[in-house]
Length: 538
Image (cartoon, rainbow, N blue to C red; front, top):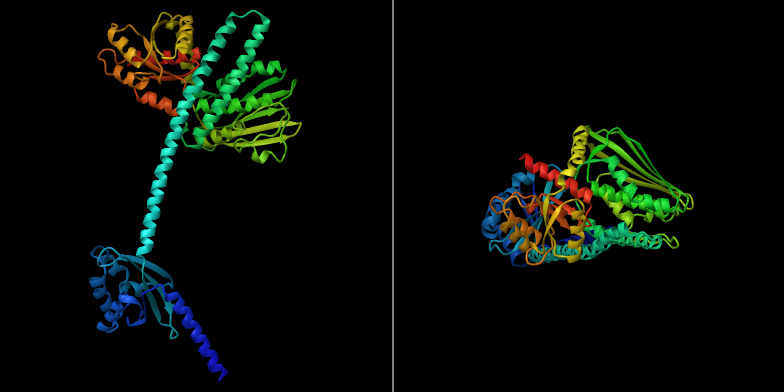
């Protein structure tokens, strides 16, 4: 009696479990795969009863029930695929025991149903499928609502990102413009000073101004890198020139602190294809930090090595910045590349952005960066990047041509479009110091007007500011490019913005070159000469 009761309890428990699992389905059928016989387990609601009626009408045969069910209860758009996916032949041909779901629309074309098919083995070892059908219309509507909300959230995020980019562009221009004027005039003042006290004041203004500009650039660059706006713009450059240029920038600072700044080179190929601006930004951060955190009388070494690369036409370049500075604690090193993290270093001030920028730039170039450091012993930063090799002979000839041709700029006539009075005055002074004749336009509209009014050949090239009232530099360039007989005048963008996409936009507008402020006359001369030679060769 107890055995009978125990079996009854087990059966009751199984029934309760099956009932609990099945309650979400308005129909549960078992289809035997040997003969196609149907057994109905659950018939809930009007839809369940309709399926049960089909079973009885078609003698509980799946091959007869399925077409009739599809004709009356499945939408035209879903019917063909429904018949294929749930056909007796397809159900029977599946050898593995597994489950799948199939979704389809009702005959009204507004409700969604889901059929869940599970393969089972009966006690007699024959196979069958259990098909449960449920209404998923609410789930579909919920998913659609969620997708719509995600779509709106994505649009809002895109708009916020664009607003952030626009804000950063504006901030870049508005902050860098006065800083460039300050640093530019400070450089001009340096040439006129003879009093040692005033020279010292000028030097400190220059150092502080450069530090402030560096901090501004770090904040703006970090934001742009994180927003995905920063891209690589590669050209053939000399590794030697890039390292020497950055090292020379810090020469005076190293000398003042009596730090020995050594540069070592062990490379076969000087010319590489790279984004020189970003490579120099990496070097500026690392060499600058090495000197900043190395006490007076210390030693900083910049060691460049080239190794064989597995990729044909490439070289593996290793840059090591080694200093005898204050070093870092072992606990701080794991957080070194996190934004806004700085280790307490007494009076030395930092934004905590330099190292994260370096890490992100190295990652962009597909390289690696490693650091070894001990408190009181110094630090070693090791960067390894594969660079495509450049054309050594071609670039050598190019550089020689530029050096020879620089004197040819004397007497050239330039139209300078600049709305900022101080920038215009400063730019005019340094251009005239190089022997150039300068004509000034206060905005893009005046610039276009002067090009139209003056005879053909008056202007050898135009220096065009980007952000100007009445007509910006992009539109002014497009207007000039539409003027017959004068549409080939070389136009070089001259902007406080220093981002890659600004340069791309300038070139897209029809400009021939791009230089950021404050003007570096050597770079400007080189670019003008290149463009003039290119135009002459056309």
